[in-house]
Image (cartoon, rainbow, N blue to C red):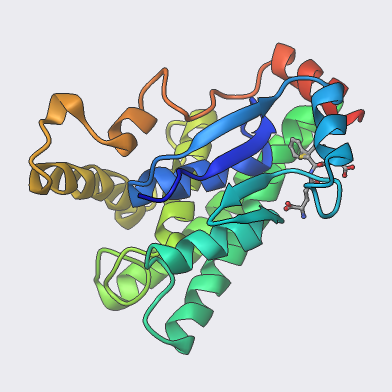
Length: 237
Ligand code: P9H
């Protein structure tokens, strides 16, 4: 069997978290080699394994991939999360890019100075409820299916579920006006339940994803003050 993908990033959500979600949802195991200090980062740089001197970097199938979207697109192709034809793929990309714009706000705001931070949280919630969530609610309304594209799980669904969890962390009521998006969250639980049942694994010995949604998993916790300082020191910003 091929080796597990190896992730290189710091021990925080940041730009790697969507990759973690994607693999967890695909039921693929991965390993992580955390960058803890600026010296760790410099070591990777001097080893010549970071094409643009940046992380995320993922070692997979003999490659050392950088650029978060390139990484996610590779996994999406590999694990059949990228549609059946060009048009489905275009939709999946379009939905994913919209979610990426919202995600960008989500991963950056914790590092804002006081005052700016609160304003950016408010702006992000406003964009989620008035721009992005209504758009995705409308997609589900338009076709009545359980997945965004082609009646089949794709990376767009996984990004959407990740974003739903993120936004609910900030405001438990944020989906109040989006009944179909509420169903997406719970549908995922069914999806993973059947996945597990089908593989004859007992629920209690669950696969990656159920663990992923529980404390102690490879899912990173919300960014806190300590983690902010650590990340700042590693990347010197
Ligand atoms: N296009 C940390 C927390 C939240 C958001 C961003 C960064 C960009 C991709 C060193 N990587 C602070 O800037 C840390 C990228 C990759 C690329 C990096 C340098 C960043 C952060 C670490 N910075 O999507 O992969 O910006 O390596 O020299 O640029 S993540």
